[in-house]
Image (cartoon, rainbow, N blue to C red; front, side):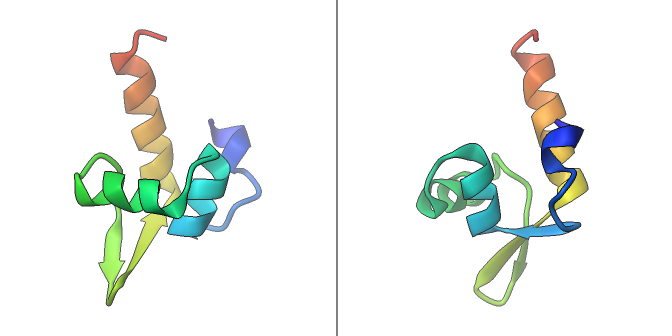
Length: 66
């Protein structure tokens, strides 16, 4: 997963994560609000540190047995 995020900045916004995962921004916000995807809320906006997203992907791979 690290190679996938290699060209992204250290802090991602919802639109970047949505594009990366080929889903809508609304879907990403729903997952953030359900605490499925870790994020920081800055005012009304969410920011996702790249290393948090990498850890999230790694944990999901472990739970799926991949």
